[in-house]
Each structure stands twice: as C-alpha cells, then as structure tokens.
Amino acid sequence: MKNILVLFICLLGSLGASGQIIYEEFNSTKLGESRRLKIQLPRNYDSNTEKVYPIVVVLDADYLFEPVAGNVDYFSYWEDMPESIVVGIMQGDTRYDDCSYDETNYFPADKGADFFEFIGLELIPHIDKTYRTAKFVIAVGHDFTANFINYYLYKDPPLFNGYINLSPDLAPGIDMSLPERIPHVKSKIFYYLATGTDDIQGLMETAEELNTSLKGLKSDTFTYFYDNFEGATHYSLVARGIPNALEKIFAVYRPISKKEYTDVLMKTETPIHEYLKEKYKTIEDLFGLTNPIRINDFIATGRASEKRKQLESLKEIAELAKKQYPDSVLGNYFLGRYYEESGEPKKAMRTFQSGFDKEEVDFITVDLLLEKADKIRTDFGY
Image (cartoon, rainbow, N blue to C red; front, side, top):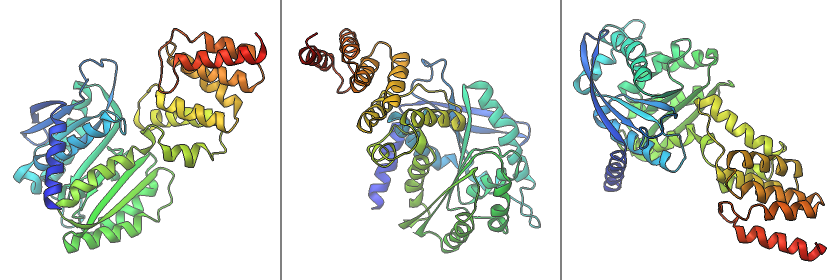
C-alpha cells in the first residue's frame, strides 16, 4: 500500500509539472525577511487572457506542494474543479515559529502573528495584483499548519473560503471555540477535516472530538466534510485527503454525472431548465466564475426534459444552447424535439433541416437530424 501511495504522489507531481511553475523570492515587510514561493499556473494561463482563477494556498509547501498541485491539475483537466493558481509557501524549519501561538490565549503570537499578517496582508494581495484571480481562496495545511489556517476563521470576513485540515495539531481550546465561532460567520465556508485510524493517537482523538462538534452545526453558510481513513498514517492520509477534499468542495462545479442525472434530474420538482441555470449561478456565486454551460450539461438536461415531458424546459434549454453554441447542432436538435412533442411537425422538420451545416455534438449528428426530418416528411406527406 505504501508503494502505491508513493507512486500516486509521484504521478501527481509529474502531472503538476505540465502546469507552469514559477519560483519567487518574496520580500516580506511583516516578516522582515524573504520567503520562497512556488507557484503553479494553469496549463493555458497565458492563452486564456480573459479567464480568472481561484487560488489554493499551500503551507508546508516543501512537501505538500506537489501532491496538491498535481491533484489540482488532474481534477481541473477533467473539469471536476476549476483551473486554479496554486501558491506554495516554502517553510522548512521555520514552520514551528511561523505557527507559534501565545500560551495564554492560544492565538498567533510573535513570529506566528507576523506570519499571519504576511499571508493576509502581503501574500494574497500580491497574488491578486500579479495574476488573474477569482475571489475564491482555499488554504491547505498539515498538523501545525492545519491548526494555523483555522485562525483565519476568526477574522470577519474570514480570509479563506475553503479550509483543508489534514490531521491538525490543534492549539488548546480551538476544538471548543471553533464550533462556537463558525455559526457567526456570514460568508460561505467549506471546511474539510481528515485523520486516519493509524494517525498519531492524540491527533486522531482531537480530530474525532472536533468532528463531533462540527457535524452537528446548523448553518446555511458552513459546508463540512470529514474523513477518517482506514489504515492511514499521519503522512499517508495526506495522499487520500487532498483529492477527497477537492472533490467535495467543488462538487457543484463538476459536469452533470450519471448519478446526478438519475438521482436529481429525473426526480427534481424544480423545472429542469431552472435547475441548469441555478447550477451555473451557484458556480458564479461561490467561485466567482462565469463559465459557459457545458455541452455535457446541455445534453443531460435536454435528455431529462425529453424523458420527463417537460416541454417548456426543453424549449428553454434549446434556446440557451443556440445562444451559447450557435454553430453546433445542439439547439436545432432540442428545439426540433420540442416542436415534435408540441404537435408542430412542420416546424420540427424545418428546425432539424436547418442544422445540416452545423457542427456535430456527441450522439447528435447531421445524419440524425436529417433522418428525423425525412421521417416527419414521410409520416405527414410534406
């Protein structure tokens, strides 16, 4: 199992290499010293000049950067999450001072307070100014640094939108004050916590206690995920936690899957075209991204509308498809199907015929459109 995990991390590292890697020495006024940053830009960052990208901030980047960057590159390649800018802070031996806290109130103190301000007041503004960023930022930390990222939840508003806590070594009292603080956070927060059955005993117990407190919270703005990986150690849980966290945080971003089609589209009481528009409105609201509706999602919602006889949704989806993909057969096919089901065969025939010179999509071929038009002509004698 260890060999498989090592190989997996290596593969992810090689995937990350396909993105653009930048090393930077950042001179910090707050820290009074320079810090080395490792930044991965998305594959097509330079060519997509109008596109903006969420940020993933990685503490302990000396060993966490590659698995995080590799997973981000892999998931975004398959559209399971948006392409993102990964910013790693190289810490090495400074991680303990960076994450230091006061022994009375257990909040960042001395170098820890400086590091806290470095990230919030220098690093994130620098990344926003230098690159095209969306207003969605995730932080990733492991043990000491996982504890540290939680302090940003006590800011109003919190600095980060997502928190990936891998076996956090929590400061005293955080496990009690954090569940009290979260219901007062007004902005949308994604929070992921992971441990393993072979994790360091004290850390696993603390994670389980925190999970007990967090899973019962009632808040419309707090989305919580927890994993306790069977057989995972303090270090191997990282390779399992990172992809799980990204998959869960960006669940709404993914293309409509077979499961979503079966369990949601075929059962929802919401009109299917409204469900489609709401999905992309949610993506815009959560992640600051105004993405065009995917062809996959047009096909899924169009087929569901056909099967459920939601004719108004079928028409709306067809009109949306014609606007977003005017050179494809998508709009012609679903609008033709709308006219067929609405008892207007002549309009259906003409709509199918008018797609003869357009780009084919998935199962919707020009031959299929012409076959449907010919069948209507034969059936009705046009």
